[in-house]
View 1 (cartoon, each protein chain N blue to C red):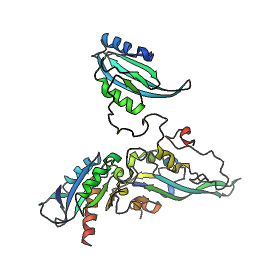
View 2: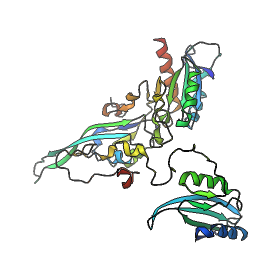
View 3: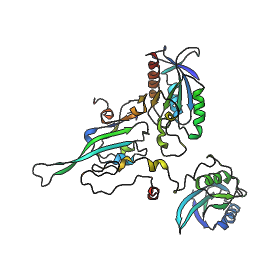
View 4: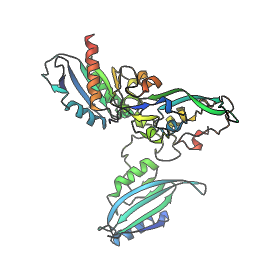
Amino acid sequence: MSRSFTWHQVEPKDWRDKIGESRNAGFTFFDFLTGVDRENVEGNQMCEVVVHLAKADLSESHFISTQVLNELPSITDLIPAAQWHERECAEMFGVQFNGGNAKPLLRHENLGRPPLLKSTVLAARVLTPWPGGAEPEIKEDGRKVGNASRRRQRPPGVPENWLKP
Amino acid sequence: MTRYALTVDPNVSVEVVSASLACCTLELQAALNSGSLIQVSESDTGPCVIVIAGTVTDALVPSVIELIHAYPGAKVMSFGACATSGGPYWDSPPVSKGIDQFVEVAAYVAGCPPRPDAFIQAIQELSSKRAS
Amino acid sequence: MKHSFIALIEDKCTSCMLCVRECPAWCISLDSHTIDVTEEGARRPRKVNVLDSFEIDYSLCMYCGVCIDVCPFDALAWDEHRALVTTNREDMLLGIEELGPSGSS
């Protein structure tokens, strides 16, 4: 069976209209809704919200996405199944879905920043000394022994901006 | 809560209380049903072992402490990397980094998950310690 | 072969640090230094890394085997069954002697 996938990037104001349009055009199977942290888009911290709708026989798929700062109208009245996903997206990416269910899903309330944002620092990764920083001529704390000249490496999973004070 | 004895030495019996928190539990169940342990009468005497098998999140810590306090004198076994140090979740904010931060641990079992035979070995270790 | 222990074959290790850097749990640490070895006929002395210490923290290790996979010199290997049960968390930090392959000591 051949499958076709089409991507639609819309403005937040057209979000509900586009999804309603697709649903009415026979894309009734709701697969998922999720967020993607786009970080810095022209100076703004943007989060992309993506929804995947498909025809019931999975022959055609629509991926509808929009970039938001931190809020978006809920689509739960159009697609009730999206509620769980919206709550998850709200918790993990800090996107507020206006008109949806705002009850926390998995995390306890007030437990720090949304964990899937790249700007959320994993303190353990910053505070734990990375054993891989050592070299035959560089000790773990960065002390050089002998005439080592190699640049120090950054630990994996630790973006440069986490290390800035 | 069930009392088990070692198949090789039925005189050694332990009460096993398992806190089944994550996937390590499957390996624990495999150990309990591996044939190396046999179920014996509840009335036998012998040490009680609380097996903390799986990831302990900060939110679960009070419940784990409550469970341990419900069995005074019981020995705590830290089964697997998660219970011992956070294991694969060592960098995750909601996961506690080792149950030894809030309870006394009698035996640590390494592994992710530990093999069933590691559990049998830990039981042997804990029961022989009592005899000495 | 049971995947129950990661052993270090000390002679094969070149202190290249690949395993340490790839470990997702950051549970391996390695210390080494460099010496000059002069070979007969060579124009310049050759730099050789000497392994000083190698430790795996088995309280953190998730037995994923990435270190074994990335080692270009097969200095790390799965080993026969050796369940690690300790009464002390510090005892789960194993050094070069304890990490030797079974049957070697």
